[in-house]
Length: 130
Image (cartoon, rainbow, N blue to C red; front, side):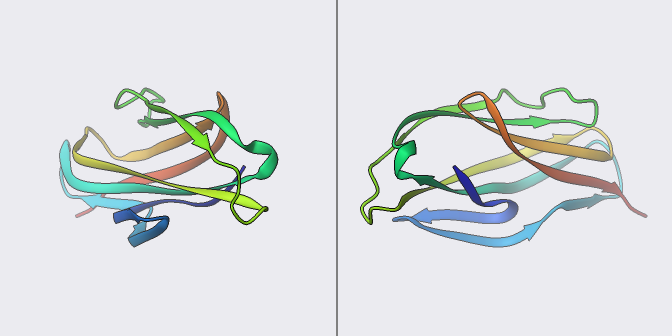
């Protein structure tokens, strides 16, 4: 599996295999804590080779500055089809987060696991300003 896109953004949408990503970022600023971020997304585009056809389990963890999970991990099964072009299959995943509460500034992280193996990490820096 190759990760083509793994990003935080203001908006993401999968429209028939076409992934739209708007407003990529890695940090959010706040003057006071705790604070609530109204909305953001995590967007992923994954490429699988023909030999990776079949069932795979996926898990996305969101952890705080202390390494503790903020939410229950998001888990699911992916059924990767045989590639129509004989080369590879792509899967788009979009995760929407609304009214997320952040208790303090620091480095938060999203962790992507495929078949129980860590695939990638994505930092989110929560900064105190002013």
